[in-house]
Image (cartoon, rainbow, N blue to C red; front, side):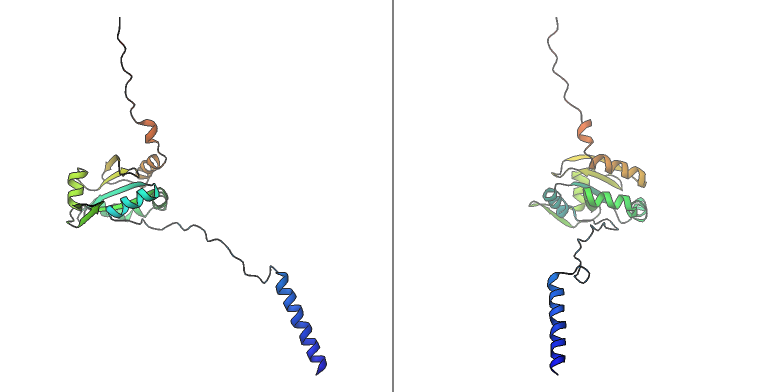
Length: 180
């Protein structure tokens, strides 16, 4: 009996020392999860998206659409499912979707406006789809209309995301000096 107690004590002592020594083979490995890229575009309402863009200092990609719009449906089934498009939009933009026929009310910093009036009055949308590019403060940078292939849309997104537009903006002409 005494011999069994000594043997059990010995094994308990060895196990304790093994645990305290921190053997890497039995210790759980802690890994940092990889950044997960979404598989689809995370569309937001305009008012929520604009607030988030200011907070995160990101550009806004505004998708003006309508339920009856054929090219809008085609964009949803093709271009907007492309992994490169999803990736650049998720990394560099806040994506907002505005239904140009909706009478739902948005609250933009206390200013109330319907989706329909936003599309028509504020952005002059006359056909669908129309896509506006905005900076993080809501300044309108430009727009494109109609169906866009993956290659076409990606080139516009890359141009805006890289802030290339800042290099190509028109600069005021120098003042003319009085001639002789």
